[in-house]
Amino acid sequence: MNESAFFLRRMNDHVQYLGKIKATLEDRGDFQGTDHHSCKLGLWLDSDGPIESSAIGTEARATFDQILDPHERFHHASKQALACKDAGDRNGMEDAMTEMFKLSNTLVNILVKLDGMDQ
Image (cartoon, rainbow, N blue to C red; front, top):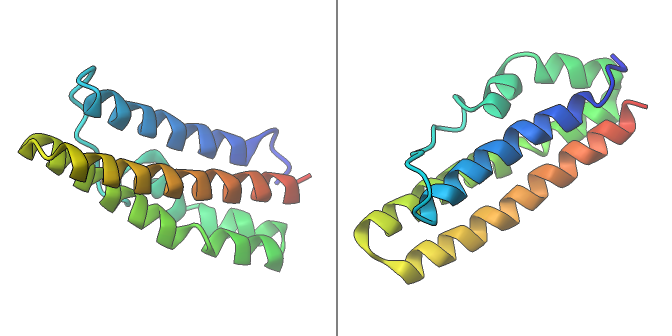
């Protein structure tokens, strides 16, 4: 594949999504998110991602597979944070945001690792 910064662009898609959720939680936006299949990263995970990671090699494909569960859990945590915000549950929102940011870090680290494998 060796497309310049390919996996980093997938990471940027995720970071942009995270920023929209964060803005809404901070009363600076109204983005309500999507399910884990409908965001830009999710669309790639469900379509070209398996093929593109497999083309790099079996280790890259195994690393790619590690992103699926935390990605789904990230979307669950972001929806939970939004629901808690709507319900006026500040503590619940902050707990969900903490989980959301931890999972986001996991996603970014996996995508950076994949980028390193594609050199």
